[in-house]
Length: 341
Image (cartoon, rainbow, N blue to C red; front, side, top):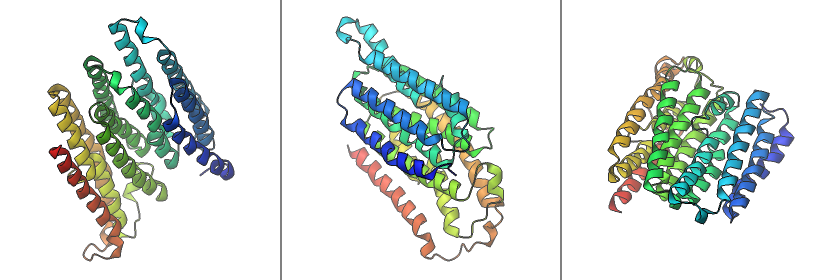
């Protein structure tokens, strides 16, 4: 999987230390410095991936560097010398620089191409771990955003969801499907960031957990496209259930935990009377459910060993699916608590 195990083992601890450094940063410049350190470490990490291409790596570096310097430039400006409209424009650019770093349009092709040329472990790092620093910065400047800026950012998120949803419908490459899925899920998370930061953190943690178990299953069984699911040989029933529960939760099917988090986001938009945006976000969510079901159908109906599994008796092999369902119902308790508040 990797060209140099020793370099990989050396870089991983330092890489995660850089992620923790962001929470100790107390100034704009220190945040930028941590971002640059994290960028260098991540490039050092993925350069050992045998599937990586040099042009994708360079594109990633250029996009990340450009947006980092845009962030540094606008964060160093003295806001008191500008008019209110100019301040709003600067805040919008600050937000857009972080959104571009996370792979949102118009700079999305580098993200899709890079994800397609990584192994599943590095895909998890890029789609989840590398989003922590930009999300933290967005949280730190959240109080500066007025309603006009929020509406503009929400419009960008909806356009990103539509583009990702339409682009993923014709894909059979699971890495590309998960790449577009990541953009859609992050759109929900960022929307929740501007409404309720605590719920956003919970949503992000739930999404990270679901993605981790899915990517681990894909990596363990060497699944890279939908055709691999037709001949997938799983000898244990809980592997089927575990993978299907993860996909259904990611798609937002009730009673899974992913549905609860989307319901909280929908209710938050409803309370803000953002019915126009709410309609389109629900529409995209329903359409995106189609490509999640495309993963489940071959897994359940056509996989070579699916009819040989014992579905009649529950034993200890069902521990993980049962825990997964319990976790989903715990999310409903969270929803009830949110309703009370």
